[in-house]
Length: 241
Image 1 (tube, rainbow, N blue to C red):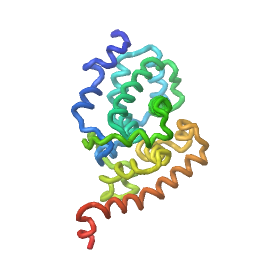
Image 2 (image 1 turned 180 degrees about the vertical axis):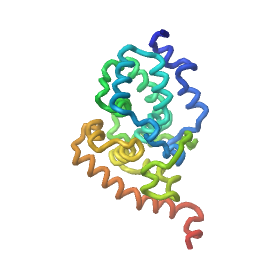
Image 3 (image 1 turned 120 degrees about the vertical axis):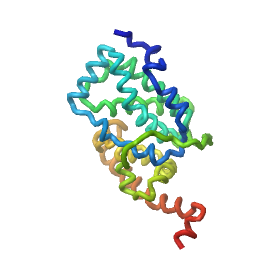
Image 4 (image 1 turned 90 degrees about the vertical axis):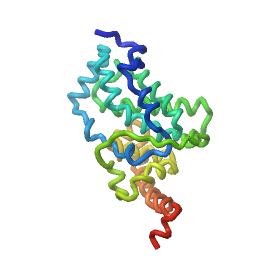
């Protein structure tokens, strides 16, 4: 069996992220196609989670290839929303998979693999924000001016797009980035990653009541911000008149 090594993880054959990042157009202006990724195609049963845990414990390189292929778009999208900066998200994306490689034996299969994966990514964001003495995750997005769209192939609308409307879907990502970071994270985890409120509470180390409050307040903020954005678009007011 090919050794389960750092070199293998980041090789061109087994780890396509570098090509994905360079070939795609990634930015804080997340497109509707990126937002349309749902967990329907990657929902795992308890048995499948247990199989992943066994594979990580024996350091199965083919399993890691499969996990990267399966979760790379969702993970990068989550990091983009959390940090608001393309370059930061890309660096943390790489570091997250390094942590999976090093700490894979810690995953026991009792929780969803994506919850464990996203927890690693979230902790890295928090660590980085502390090193940079940032008071909040929002501060990480202040200096990023790259306007390349983040596009990935998808098959259908996300629940949040369905919540807003088909017409609003292209603006959802832009509006999410304007919301308070705590609201934004809960909305992304609940609607795009389809995590339960209990899973979000566990992952963010927040009381369930706090998660519910952030969800409701985030949703309450989303609609008017979407409307405001659309009203300020050139030609929108004229078209509506």
